[in-house]
Amino acid sequence: MDPHVFEKFRTLIYEKSGITLGPQKVALVSARIAKRMRALGIQDHADYLKYVENDRTGQEVVQMLDAISTNVTSFFRESQHFDLLRELLEGWLAQGMNRLRIWCAAASTGEEPYTIAMIVNEVLKGRPFDFKMLATDISTRVLEACKRGEYHESKMEPVPTALRNRYFTRIQRDGETYYKVVPELQRPITFTRLNLSQTPFPMKGPFDVVFCRNVMIYFDLNVRKRLVDEIFRLLKSGGYLMIGHSESLNACNSSLRPVRASVYKKP
Image 1 (cartoon, rainbow, N blue to C red):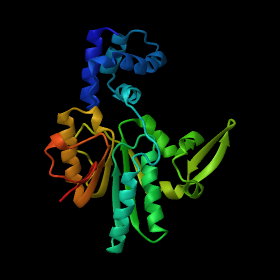
Image 2 (cartoon, rainbow, N blue to C red; image 1 turned 60 degrees about the vertical axis):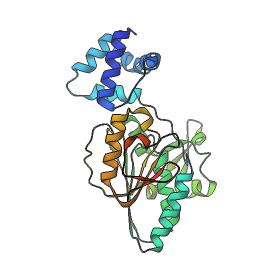
Image 3 (tube, rainbow, N blue to C red; image 1 turned 45 degrees about the horizontal axis):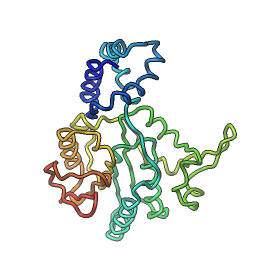
């Protein structure tokens, strides 16, 4: 890819998603947009750039960002956060709480929101409770995977057998084994597209817990600050933010206070 064209892609991707790509990412960008170029019959990177810029529907920008964005996730990833969620919910229930709102900000292919839903269901044990979760992502492709809620058996290893039997239906297709989320687990979750770099967000909150894990590493400080400010606005007083273990809010000048590694609380 011509360096000048790559610089234009870098700028466009940053403006549309907040994702910062270093100059060493030229091969990655080239490889990830290749599928879109083939689908459109476009051979030259500069021609594809023009196509994206001139598409008034905005759909090709979405397709391009789908191709660029990284979707690394798994069930029960960074499990300490889910242990804390269980602990918090048990404490809140003991205090008489009967309403819970959670936002999963970077839902990817759904493993995180469904892990959260399993934890909540296990603590509630069927008692009447007003629980809703918002699960968002910039990628329409991964949100479709979220809504399908279907996972190859190779993805299911972190899920304990008891939970697998309770919350998934085993299905066979083309000689392969898949597990589909039961409707009970999916029912409280709303999946919707959201660009975390474009603040303010349309939802009103307030949320008791926000999971925004392993996504801020792709943003520069300016975007991170705006995102954290918006999360602060949407959290209720006493609410919690959980971020990735490799992330920190140290440079964000946030009023959120750290309570343990990668966990923050709104005063």
